[in-house]
Length: 220
Image (cartoon, rainbow, N blue to C red; front, side, top):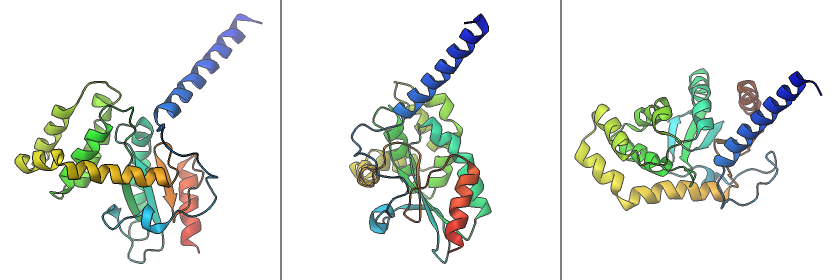
């Protein structure tokens, strides 16, 4: 075996190890075994609750995209600009719903979700949601609390800090986030991001796959 070939094989092994580590890190240990990703349709009353956050709404309600996300998840951050692009491209035609699914191994994921939920109480859900992804590299994947960091985000957004603190620490806010996570577990969500399109969980490997799945539902 040549030296160059040995180096190439070592690099391939390293890449596979990194990819595997990311997949494991973004999975939750107490999720039930996943079923066929293309099999069946998720119950509508579990997939989208009355209080679920709709980032965009289509009047005809024909197509709904639901994302279970973890604000500390690198894969979710990577998907974020694509979701934003699709929201613009399908504005008025597709409803986009976000649901929390903090991974237990992510130190700040649940705290970040509660911060977004507390911001939502002041009409700033999307602003805080965007801020979390745009700054994730500075606070994500760390084993120290970033409570002060998130408090700073709230101040930058001009939130009423007394109300924000009260809502952020309110047990009802934690219960709201956990309810989303439990719904995800019931639907077989094992990692983030997980997308459902009209209740079905398609195999999505690229933006083109995502668009094709949406177009297929719009064409029905």
